[in-house]
Image (cartoon, rainbow, N blue to C red; front, side):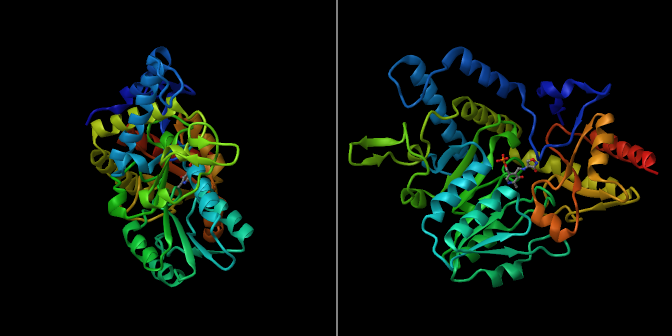
Length: 402
Ligand code: 7TS
């Protein structure tokens, strides 16, 4: 296996005199040289506004921007018209809450799960309040899996929206989207998938999952910040009114009325994040060159190793499924007698970057009766040695707190 660290300039540095061990990939991944170069090239050679100006630079920028839609579409098994660029997962979900929220009525139900990130919780909570709709929550089991029996009971004829994460950013649990799609569609509910943590790590085919909408962020998959994706089934997008109005999305405007272009342009008002789209397309190319299934199996091996090694350390409790099946390379844990922030700070002294806190999943923390957890999350450039360094640093932290 190639050492992919070489492709990521930022990983060459030392922190507190120690080699950087970056284990905060669920928050954001680092960027390979190829992505950084693609963005630089764009600004040095092709920068112009898009939407097909007739001059050479605008044509180049427009083609690159349109090709980015194509690249994303191909990556997740969608059509080009079904890919809307947004700022990220958060914007994609807020877009849906706003646009789909317009047709919600008092008494309608929105179903979420207990393991949602605030981005897929608060927008629905707000729209439910506004519309007098009811928010219902699917609980998790003792094994940190989605309670499918409860899900079945909670989905009713009143459920209009089921919005659920594909993969928990805290537990690492991967949810059975295909099964949930069947269940949701039986009651004519719209299935929205938060794929922020799954698209970067596993093969996704939206047609196979049969989700209605799917959201993810470029920065968690080697792309730049400020670019994300909203996939929507073409049939559904055709009937959706825009979220924002302005330039680039218009077919015709008179003093009386306006008409819109087709999807995706009608949903991308204003000058878009062109460099972000180009960077994301390059990031996908980088992933495809390695092979997403190779990434999945490599990070799976790392996760298995990390789980085994962490379990050997006294006082550590894994907060998430103990087995490797349907589990992403995200491991939350607590250390007896130590606050997650203290652990994070001591590990930083050792050059190890992990996260500590509630991970923007306060409803889950409340259910688990935890203030927070520590979380180590892996990607292609991490190695078994990184995990050994993590374990050593944890033991050092425990010694300090004795
Ligand atoms: N959904 C999930 C499951 C996430 O993990 C995150 C970000 C988001 C949505 C929001 O993505 P954004 O790109 O719009 O911010 N998760 C994390 C995390 O776990 N630590 O920092 C950000």
